[in-house]
Image (cartoon, rainbow, N blue to C red; front, side):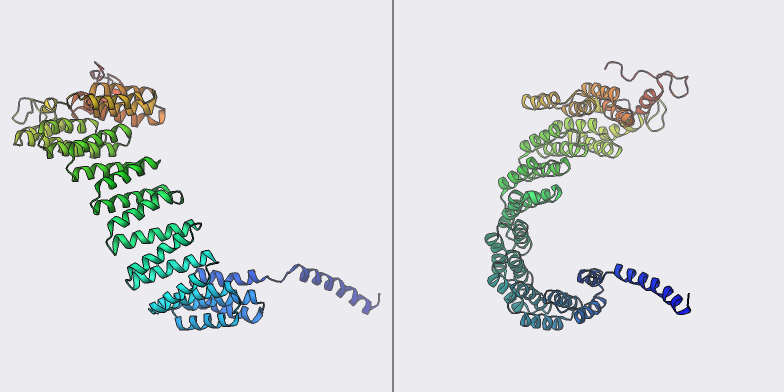
Length: 495
């Protein structure tokens, strides 16, 4: 082969290969080249974004692409607080594309935003209102313009009637835009609640959010609207309406964590309205409907004690306080319940003797703090036994019996029955149910079942917290205890 032909043979495959590589490197699309600008804007790196946009404006001349680039550029200038530059960009853009209605409305919203940022509120409102009037055939954009106008009128200019009218127009003119309609109602509610102090209309707005637009929201948000409606009606001194919407919210929601605060608020309102028997009835309903919501039931029973004390029914308050102590399941709730019992003893006796002796017995037993018999600090009587449970009541008894009957014969059902019997004032039956729960519980729940059996069931059955550590030892190791040499009495004898 001649040298010239050899060189050609070497170059030709290389050139062909290079051509293949060039063919594989497709030119970037507009969307791909715009992406760095969008990324910079998202990261609030607006000067860098403008550099990319300016470079793309030199390259792309198609009107669709130019409009997108220049709108983005105006947005960057606004975010950089260069409001005059942003206005100039938007006004020029509108002049260049006079027949593009979509561009005109989008740019005009930006003009309104820039004027608002410059505190030129009249001009901002005028721009927003022009969008809502001239571009009503673009529902989403027109609705957004009305929302923005309402914000300027209410928040910046304090022209509440005009601002509220702008918000109301969103729901009236664009009912199909449910998200925006709901947003307008929410903004009206916030203005009426916090700025105009129109509690009645604020309550009605929050109620509309909860009832008409409830499907748009997660339960915790929806629960908040029900609660807000109740609070606003209460502030407007519309107690029946407050109770009604809270009740409706409790019934509408599914999650007990969202339902029970509304239930307890109803009790609080009844207490404030000095309707103490109704408040106690509501407390019993809460306990029967949510027996495994332990903190909620303790709160309801505490309110029951307060209602009795407020009416100077001190013996009933003491009985209700004993029930509170019987059903308390954790260290903190037991301490709190013990304080309520001591307070009830003070109310009955007009002195602190039994109150202090009760606290000492529950903590140290009959031998007192020194643990030795026949010494001055002995507490010879468990005064809690003298605190009689609430007397029989046909309506109350029927409610608790029905709640117990509704529980299944399984672990959670036995637990619920245990708490219900404790709140009913039947400690023996309570202990029996907690013992059944312990017997049938899965292995993973043995510690929790043992905890409730001892700290609720046996505590209530004995009317004493003292000595429960031996019950735990019996459950763990049997009658011979941990050492294998003890003789621990059967704590379940008689059950």
